[in-house]
Image (tube, rainbow, N blue to C red; front, top):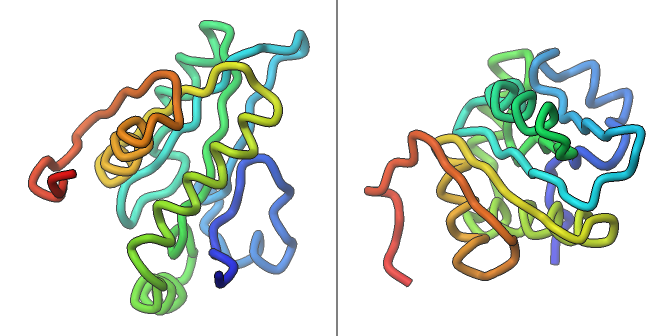
Length: 151
């Protein structure tokens, strides 16, 4: 399997990538000082970035939940040329799903409960992960149901 180019909220962003991303494109991880047993993985929409999920991330964190917002494959680049090139060479649809599965696997190593939230395309990914029973709870906003395929 090829390595999927997404940027986990759980890992430091490489300096060479950090310099190429839009500042609001950086993945983020909010963790409480007192360890939480629950995390919410927040997924952004198509051509968007983790910043898009910030209102839900902040509300979840204020409720005592930890929050992780990865940067999905092909997204978040500051230069339009980089963004177009990355999105046009996005490997396969399955790679987008696998990047989210990977983020869930990392979260499961640290948390008893893994919740997921997705905006737009992120909502489709979140619903798919719930359908695979990989998460304990799921919420979405602005999910385009016409993009969902029957199971």
